[in-house]
Amino acid sequence: MNKKRMLFASSEVYPFVKTGGLADVSHSLPRALNESYAVSVVLPLYSSIDRKQFKIKPIESFEIAMGGSLYAVEVYGTIYENVAYRFIYAPLLCDREFLYGPPECGYEDNALRFGLFSYAIAELLRREKYAIAHLNDWQCALAALLIKEDSTLETKCVYTIHNLAYQGVFPPSLLPQIGINESYFTMDALEFYNQVNFMKAGIAYADAVTTVSPTYAKEILTPEFGCGLEGFLHVHRRKLSGIINGIDPDHFSPSCDEALVEKYTNAKGKKSSKSDLLKQLGLKGSSKPLFAFIGRFTHQKGIDILVESLPKIAQMECNVVLLGEGEEGYRDALASLSEGYGNLHLSFGYDEVISHRMYAAADFLLMPSLFEPCGLNQMIAYAYGAVPIVNKVGGLADTVKKVESYDENTPFGYGVVFTSPTSRSLVAAVKKSCELYSDKKHFEAVVNHNMKCDFSWSESAKAYEGIYARLSK
Image (cartoon, rainbow, N blue to C red; front, side, top):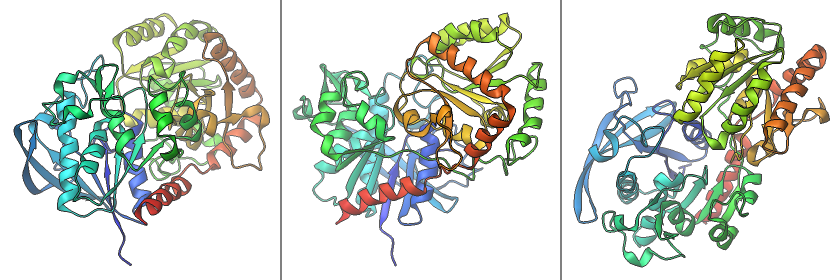
């Protein structure tokens, strides 16, 4: 039977390039969908991508007219893990040190860069027939408008919001540069407080809109989490649904992870990883609970709360390790704290291998997020036997059940849950975690249960396929 073709568009895909969870999703979801659809994944061919390592070869080239200018575009391709990949190369889009800009700010011409990427996506749809185009986040959102504008395209469009806080908002003067008629500069289309909002194009013109957890789909309809788009989303709520993300069990599995000093399958097997990491980082006390934070140093991730809480947490019998990159102010504050306390250690920068070793070593994972569309870290923590400590928002509310309600006969993952984003709540949660850790038998039972939970893409992929099938009728 011939599979229907689907083009999955994303601004980053692991292992080619990654700044966050979008890259992991854009790698693992297409793999799961590839069993039912003939999936091609398209992303920019950034200068940091190793063409030789991934055997990326040229396929075709064409010109794109955008805003009165012609842009030469080259298309490259490869097959990775049985999935077809297409890479868009244009100097404007790809020849940069960072994907979106330095940690403190985005590039000033990101509207042009990712406008061009959206035009290239639409051109691929014209050249090769696809039943479905699945667009992700603001960097691809303009393609939804371009698809809808082109009466020759029969492709149905699904748009996924991974994080509503990043919408792609730019001054209206760029409209002529990206070739978008001023008639679209209205509240019903791209206008947003007298600015141009790329994400609104995805929401307005896609045939279906999804976000990455059921709770987040409800939250973004409220002023607290809607980031100014709650009213606009409410207008389009009938095509909005929330589907929880998954993780790739092949990539996140301590039983076969080559990054680890010793592979393992249960709580007791974590000891070597913990001892090795503590020694490597110059921390003492392998019998003390080890808390880890792995992620971006941004307001969303609760770094303000973490910075305020760490002096109190450091006074407890525990060790804390932090890995991430982000805003300079947070980095400096965390660095100062790690220098002041002997049981805190900061590793600044992103490193996939170190992150896996930290998950394997940690007893608990800190996730004090102010909002969290889905979160993958808590699922990865389950797989590696680290108990998540979370604020009950978004996907964290959907995937982390209170450890007080632990039942070994359920399929749920359990963690330490708090319900208000404050330093007081986080410190109390860490104290509760230390108490849980002291009950070794119960703690190991929870860890072993969590490690067996299924957070693969199997069920979520079926939900996406249901949307594709409905649109393709």
